[in-house]
Structure formats: structure tokens, C-alpha cells
Image 1 (cartoon, rainbow, N blue to C red):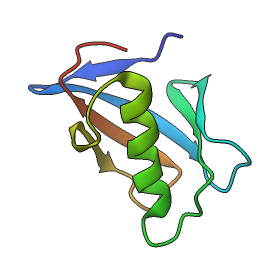
Image 2: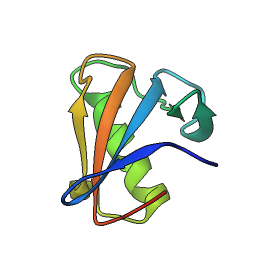
Image 3: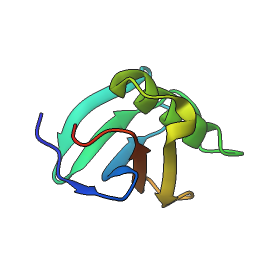
Length: 88
């Protein structure tokens, strides 16, 4: 899976497209230039954002605190910064 990313001072940033209220959770693959992630949580009270951080941290082998949503807190299209890795 080839996902475009940008290097930052602390790690990388990637574009993510989320599908909340899905019947499953996990990374589906590439959707254009974004990573497609399915979430079972509803996009209310930040539950889907928390689950996104959880899924990415599990799949990429980093701590949940190393995954931060930089842009798109209330959108399906997000930019996420992941500390401590250099590539996906």
C-alpha cells in the first residue's frame, strides 16, 4: 500500500478519509491520495476521532499519544500527524 506522506520534524503527516458508523473498523487501503479507514464509532463527541487515533496507533505500532489529528476534526477528510516513524 503506497500512501503519500510528508515528513515533519517529529514524524510524518498523512491524509485520511474516514467512514464512521461502519460495521467494521480498520484500514481499508488507499482512496486516492488518502488512507481509507473504517470506524464503528459515530462522529459525535469526538468518539470517531478517538477511535481513528486508536486504529492508527495499533496498525502502525506507535502509542496513541503519538497520533494527532492536525486538520479536519469535524470532517471525514483529515490530516494526521504520526510521531516517531519515517514512512508507512
